[in-house]
Length: 409
Image (cartoon, rainbow, N blue to C red; front, side, top):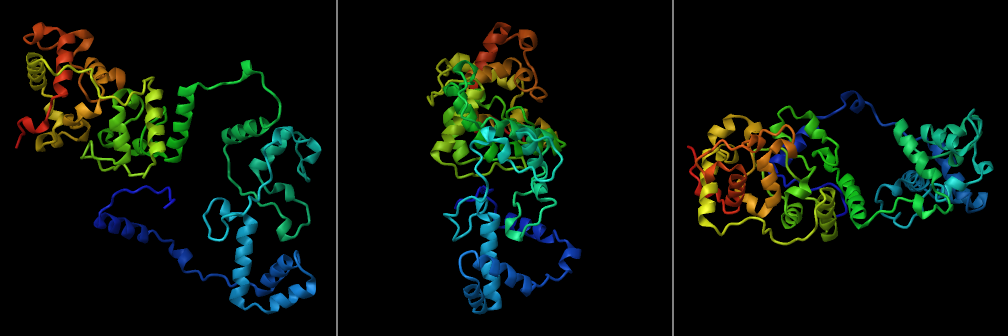
């Protein structure tokens, strides 16, 4: 129940296909090797060291003699998990209340230099250099020392980049009790706090694995040759979509571009997480949060709506926005979302700006610029006034039903 793996809503056949593929990924050379047998004399020695830390030597020997071979391995395995701190990352039954094995770092930035163990490493004896060495080679400080197994350093080798090391050093050195004057502090307002909270959740969910978001290109986008098949960009999403629609889509994703191979997962987000993401995208786009129905489109004027429909037909919008045999033959880069979703999905203000010049909102989009420099290619509708025509098309979209349009066979 607590896994971060989302549901991809796989069919039985899809799950079987993925299982078959993963089962084919084998290291034949490794699988031909036999598992090494435990050296029981070493096992006994390690168990005795553990027992003797809490009981007398004779009692430890007697306790060891009572154990079978499997019991010895089980005992040592449990002690090893506790010693290495595996439970810090993994949920392991029996270790729910175990304390972390790492040193307290809350005041690392003010820790006295003489309390740092520089060992025999030839580095400058400063906080900065010690932390850098620790991050670079965590167990190097043991070099040249005689220690038993349970005394040796246990921090893993993370292979941090220099940028990551610098970021961690800066953070650790900031952990002091020094009072920073208010005028020197970065104090987040409510919108900025909402953005930071959302940014952390976006990172946790690995949204950048598929989407371009927060200025970072999605990994799948980078490797997709036909960008029409790539996951959609999420930069500016808050200005584009309605809050209610985004909330319900994130809660229960439904297809918007059914031709895409990639699939938006179902994350099983809580109401708080759903709101966090909605607030994040909208504040990132400088939008106010209202969760109100959109009222920017005027759908009450019949002649106005008919003018919008005439322009919609003349500009052949359905050619890309309705997936037919002919449109699919053009390639996915020419396919566009179902416009029958527009009235519940898109903000009228965004649609208006998009029709004015799509390239301003999304550079490289295949959506044509029908009104370059504010000029209209259609002169016999609404007196050729580009602004009135854009408004008419936009308002027509908030009455549009795909089923009402003729489909090519």
